[in-house]
Length: 206
Image: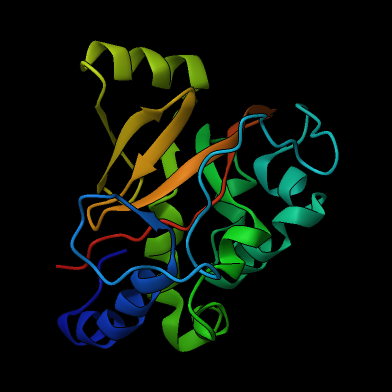
């Protein structure tokens, strides 16, 4: 959804605030250091699994709604009006931030995002975590290898994410240098695939 210039200007402070606490930052980025309460932790050696198995016969929305550790994401999806999209035929690839990922946002940001006045910003944020089609872990790794260690993937929002490997873990980086790591990948859905990530990525509003 395209924001009007007025709405865009109004959304900038909110998205800037998200960027301050969303995820871990690259070591070479010149920015204020993230506090331990907001920085996404380094990728775990063992993959995290969702708190219950996801049924491949159910949609992205249905499986996420049945997964307690994704309740913050589901609340955001419903507030944004994207529930119909993620319950539809798709297919989509969703990089799904866990509750812990949302918990690393700056204080009060999650609550602000859920307010009706910030719906446009929330839609942009969520669409930035979605890819058209089904893109599994093996395909992401193939693209990274083909790109000599770096790949660019285009989100449903129409903005790119950079994909690299940190040791053996797939790493997503937004234009601001915020990083998020795939903790559980290839969770098959009736209308696509979910990869659970440990950080919230931020779209660029220029």
